[in-house]
Image (cartoon, rainbow, N blue to C red):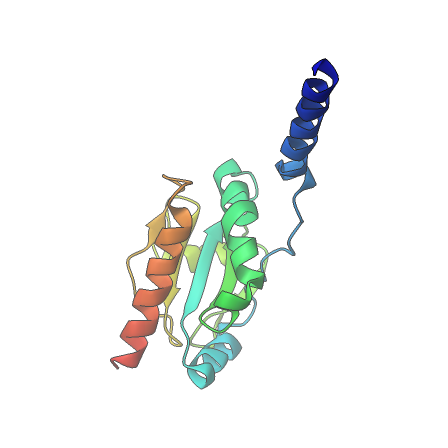
Length: 163
């Protein structure tokens, strides 16, 4: 009986480790925004919203939101046909991006145009960059973050259909 209990304890420890983040399947990083004219054309052709994910490299909440929610969602078959996702690095004044009007700007300036003050911030927009849903600011509730993302995507898709 003692050996069976030890074996069960060992099995439980192995299963607990297998489910830990260090053994979790890594997901590819989010696509970093580079050309919103092209992304806007893709959005219009596919009739799907664009999810702007504003982050900063030194932000632990951004890293957690990306690793636990956004990166898995980005590669999920369930969401691939619903939204186009791009990352904007708010503290980056060197990386250029072409905005929705075709003008060159930096990631930092692009974030300022949307009045992004906290990260992570997620904003769902249309092919011209106009907001379709309320922004998701911060990672206030890790348990409900996926729900908030799904609601924003759904609100964006509904708003596009109503136009």
